[in-house]
Length: 226
Length: 44
Length: 271
Image (cartoon, rainbow over all chains, first blue to last red):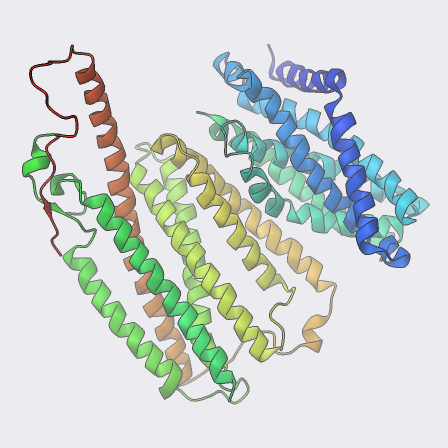
């Protein structure tokens, strides 16, 4: 069984479980939607909301990330699947990549939904010139968050009293994505700055994604070993 | 000179905080070491 | 376990060396307080608030030193052949002290900021990254308390410490880039870099030295406590196993010996 095939099978497994149970679709996505609506209640200022829409989208993404990561690892601990996989000799880096790919796919779908909601609820609009920037940020952001989420999720998974650790560990770490992606999306949506200004921020998100892709591949094994 | 209040507060926070931690470390150290024979302690 | 009843047990993590160090440090602290509060003059630009700097800068220094030691010790644990748990315990002790001094740095910094700039907080790169560091190491300490064997604890927190080393420059760079957008620095002066000379500079450097001594004293004691606690866990495990083996024998009804009748160590409260 090649490394690629293993990773693909794990990604496929996670996505199939999601497809059949539709937990992300039925629970996490509505949760994100509610968060967006709640921002509307709390902030009650149309002009302000349009200019801070990208920030609100990213904050809602971060909260939803926590739920998605916990879901991703709840699958593993329910029947000791993670232990079984490791005992069977599955390469931990393939496991890491498989779970990250599945998580990235869910995150990408979630963020697409959030952008649509921002357009609908907050009056944002996507500049044609900003579309490539938006897509690039969307992809690298999803991948970066998925790798870092899988990494820390592995650490915080399983035993009681560990799940509450995930927000404490994960939210500070994703700060560069929060900063970079928000600025990039602001530029893409015309909320602040020109599109040209936005590309360095997307670069920051991309660097983050590469760092945690590599770091996660190396660190995931030792972290989940029991 | 109400600056004095801030300055004193800083000294109190700093050395008070360290003193509290020192007492915590010594208390915990005492509790951990009172049941171990000296031979097993690497620093003795 | 028989020797536990007869061997000397000094209930302390101190040695002659640490006692000397402790006394020297206390003298240094006293001198620092006197110099800082009374002897050294007020600054031309900063006024009396420079007295806070004599504490703030050294405590920030110790916090960073402590986190560097944690990272280094974690690397030594993970990558040396022996995987000696002593490195892990050093990492843990140092991180705890780092969090303490980081908290002090942030609080004192806020008070200093209130005095100098009129605000408790500024969203600049240095402060924001410091706050981030603080939260990261609180997370590190929480992970150390997850339970399991010392080896599991060491591996988990060791990897986490190295990941932190990776993140921190990333975060610092992000925040710097971010705050670079905002030209607050020109509106609110000064930016916190102070020019000192003469006795004031000496006091500052002296402060750094005294705080470093404090750090060394604390890390030695804390690490020894962690060592003792790990040893106790091992011993406790052996006792529990022995008891279990003892339980499997049929009870001797004639000899009604209460279970708590284990030989107790002779506690010599030596100092």
